[in-house]
Length: 343
Image (tube, one colour):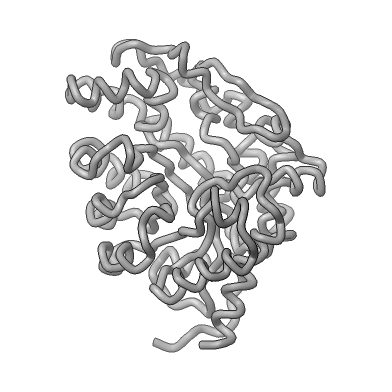
């Protein structure tokens, strides 16, 4: 297949998500690459950048303007929907992530779930939609804008508490399915609202992580829901699940989602062999060790391993530590250019 002429960043990302030829592998992070250093450079610190559209957009844009990535992603946290649903929040300061206070869950059983009709008007969702519009205005059509809509498994952790929800998934499958069914409306509605605001694709994190949830449970509870999201949300979806997930990748590949954002606990080669080309992979540069504490050369070695395996998009495995150095993040696109110069 003939390689295309030089593409824009947006064209490159969209082609990779569609399984089409690219001029080079895109550098794409479907989760956050925000750092304290970047916050200082553009005057967009947390928590403002999580709750106000202008600093959110300024910080997101640095992924392209300063780091050289082909995509930007303005939803740095995983709690916007949970905040809108009424969870008790701790917004933290510049050097820490906002969190849900899960010691005080808002719901106890499926019947408690209440989703307001005006949920999309909540300020913590509106700021995301407005930030997307600002990014589209400022970056035009040259850069891929990726949004984020949380899956119902993740929201259930926040609203019911992690331990309570996991025990429920063991003891009462029907109640678990009812919770997921009710919460899916939030995932779909917020996803499509971001499409209308101007995103090119959406990350869909659903934290059925490898250390807490088996591949069998993924198939039982989430496979059908993720296929429904791929059908009802009107843009390419990038599923994100942390941890060792090779045991469910074959199921994920059948959902109709465009890509899977995968963890460094799964090797690039085994992951590519498992999905058989049925879904694109994004990742999987290690965060807590390589990006946070090693050298640019170590980062480049992991990028080369992904490119050698044929991984379709390269980026960090998850939201990066806030103290990660700019030099290590810039090493990712630099490594892609070096690899192509030799091939």
